[in-house]
Structure formats: structure tokens, C-alpha cells
Length: 405
Image (cartoon, rainbow, N blue to C red):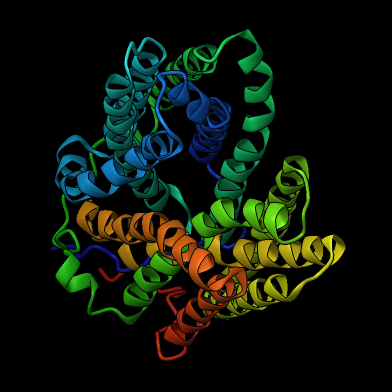
């Protein structure tokens, strides 16, 4: 009986498969659309005569539903397959977004937006499974860098387009996003209908990797811890950095927006080269260095007293994020390849990141309000250092083993 390989066979000089470019394009469209609705969502909620806290709850509902539905995602992906799960998830987000556009009350808006989180976690976990199946081992980091970059670029471009669409009405961005998602599903369906991803995975002796078994792997454990911290850091920056620029540095909202764009720019600049280099030098060096750079940039931001220094430190933090993001995905692919549809292990990783995304702004925001921004940024930096330390005893996941016969 042929045993499933723990690692994909190395093919030196592998080219990026066509399926990857299809998924990258779809990722860009999805992220672009998410950015399109971001400027409109809080104001749309306020149009129903609710307060700031209630408007913020609409934003949180999406992330909370992602976290709540994540445990069910693994079994669904195993049953449907990654490709069908991906398309189903995107369609759920499309339908819920279109429903948001026609919401007639705050509670309808809250419900429909929350349902979008269900589809979001489904296609997120499915997309990770697809990338694991299709990415050749010798360029896995490179592919992770390209895929991560597409999402960040879409996130940067989306608010610009969304700001323009809001001028036509607060409901218009949601309709545009829903249509874009349907187009993305159609492209994925048509482009991949004859690919290997449309066929069932071959039945092999190796069972899907359960969470319990995956947690025995030091690389997987470190990845889950880092995902939790990474979600905290990313969400904290989006929520607190604009307030820091406005409250401490006394800058207008536009400058705070430029600061977030600078962070994203540093992120994109580092992603592709870090992912590509990790295919040669391993994942650990970039994960450790990236978290330390992120910690240093966060501390420096807390101590900055000028706008120029704050922008520089924000860009440095973005570089750290860009070193970490593609390599986290590459580690997952290294660990889970050859174990069938390990949806539960993938969804557990995603749950950790979503938990950080939810708790980061809440806890760091409370610290900033009670003790000041320096304490909030300092705690975040300590968490980033701890995530780097976790990787020191963890194994290097990059291997180039030929499958056993």
C-alpha cells in the first residue's frame, strides 16, 4: 500500500501553477470588496439612529461569527472538498452582503453582517487547503508571499474605491461588493473546472491530521500561538494607530489613514522576498526575525513624539508583519501536506487568529484608555517577542523528502 508522503517531492525550478494565479486574483477581488464596504459600514449602521457602540458591534459581529462557526468548518470542508467549500463560502458572503444593502433595521443589518462571517471563515479555511494541495514544495513560501500580497493590495485599494462609491449612497458599496463576489466565484468555477482541484483527492493510507495529532508537532503549536498574537497585533493597529495619531500626535483623520497605508506598504514590500527566501533558508529565521522587528517597531511607535518618526516606525512594523505572514501559511502547508483534508487543523489555526483579532482591539483599547497608549503598545510588543521565543525550540518545517513508496 502506498503511504501518503509527509512532504511533497521537490521539483527544482517549479513554476507557479495556473490554479494559484486564479486564487490570487479571486483573493484580490475579495479583499478589494471588503475594503470597499469598510468606509460605509459604520455610517450605514449609524443611519438607523444607533450609537457608536452599536455601530462598532456590526463590525465585531463579522469576526465573532467567524470564530463561532470555525469548529464546524473542518467537517464541512472534508465533506464538500476545498474547491466547493471555497465557492460556497464566497457565495454566502455575497448573499449576506446583498442582504445588508437592503436591510431596513439595525437588527437586520447586524444579522446579515454576522452571517457573512460564516461564509468568510468557510472560504478562508478552504483557500488554505487549496493552496496546500496545489503549491509545489520548493516554491511554497514564494506562493504564500504572492497570495498574501494580493490580499493586502486589495485591502489597500478597497477603501479608496469605497470612499468614492459612498457618494452614490451608503447602500451602493454593498451591492458592488456582492456582484464582485459572484464574479469571483464564476471565475474560480470556470477556470478550475478541469483542474486537479476539481477532482477528489486520491484515497491514501494516511488519515486527515486531527487537531490532537497536529498539536504534537512543535511547528504547528508555534504557528497557532503566532496566529493568535498576529491577529491581536494586526487588529490592534487598525483600531489604535488612528487614535494614537489623532489623540497623541494631534493629527487629522487623513494622516492616520496614511499611516495605515504606510504600514500596509511595508507589509507588501517584505512579503514576497521573505516568502521566496524562506524556500531556501527555512521558515523559522523569518518568523523569529519578523516578530522581533514587529515588536521593535511597536515599541518605537509608542515612544515617538513626531509624525515623521511615527511613520518610519509604522513602516518598520509593516516590514515585520510582511516577514511573518507568508511564512505562517507556508508552515501550515509544510505540516499538513499529505494528510488529506485536515480541515479541523486548519480551522483551529484560523480560530486562534480570529480570537486575537477580536481580543486585541478590546484589551489593548482598554489598556490604552486606562494606562495610556505606551502601555497598550508595550503589551503588544511583549506578546510579539513571546511569539518569537516560541519558535526557538520549534522544529524547522521546511523539508525536502522524497515520498516513501
